Image: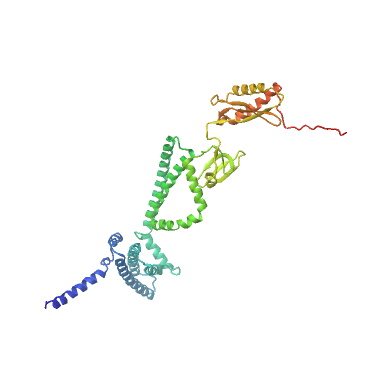
Length: 409
């Protein structure tokens, strides 16, 4: 036990050195370390350790900035704007600042706050790029053109970006065509759904290609996506009507209540469907007016698809005079319907005396026809009935009023 104080005295310097090692920077031993290698060295470090690394790299950069300032002062006193020594020190300072920026990026990614150091970094970098120093600007531009991570690197990055986007366009076109062919084999799908799927495939692939391309340019795509996600709630609130139309557009694509070219009555208007987007439905009225209906007014209301079925019943009513022969009139109607080539045999037509109206005895005439032949049957049968009734002296009455005059006393 009497040797414990002596042992403690011997171990104290070792403990002190261990404590120093824990707080000593780990990546500044080689100030010329490659940036890629430095990035790998920073991966396992904690935010506290990265703060130490950042301070150490800032100290190296600050020292180099001081040497550069002294060299510039010496050049000015010698009547020169720059010297080889100044150019060398500028290049060395730039390398140190780049490494400091790498450490700051890693520190910030792990929850650190490098705002103060970034302000200092920006100030040092901007010192030689003042507008009132054209020589410095020219020298900086020359260095940027000649540097490995300067103009040449950006040109290569832009070429890679263009190639990636071009590949995205090609792949989008190819896969959208494949999706279209697959949808064609699925007979239950509508033209609207085909268009929607092919558009989503093409644009989706293009967006992915653009995101990948931006990442090659050094853009922090993750930060952009996080910003978009953070503002999604505000955007959703501000664009709630548009998002409602979008959701209803999806429902129209999935449930397919109508297709392009169908005759419909929706949202208080009727006409032929021109197109359907995720926001609105375009309908061309019977007199050729283009009507844009928000999808929430389409899906949220009753939809009548006039041409949704292959066959339609043609509803007509014909009246005859009370003094005419009802059996003769019915026989004429049956003959006209039976002889019309566009009238279907199945389902059978319905021809019955329907009601005794104020001015006429009314017959219902309800033949069936293909949907595309509906109006042809309607118009031709109506014309033929008028001709046959006239030939048979059957009167088609019209509302009239009899006035009886009584002479007083």
